[in-house]
Image (cartoon, rainbow, N blue to C red; front, side, top):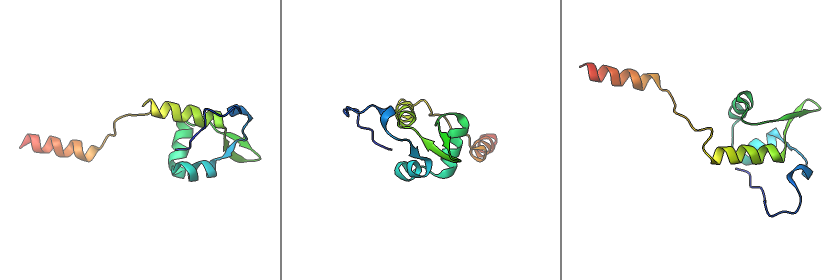
Length: 90
């Protein structure tokens, strides 16, 4: 993920926003993943001149929440559940 320097004397709000493309490049997230995160409200973006940007504060909040495991969940895999049910029925 993107590293933020907490020991910096410059507040996060003073840093310019980062374009969403640059954020995806630096974080390694795919465009689809970023779209899903934005849709769920996990990643806050702002639109400037019809382009999406991420503020440094939003990046810090997203990183903190992700590190805390707030976005963790289970993945449902219907084929695995179906296979387990069929093998148990035999």
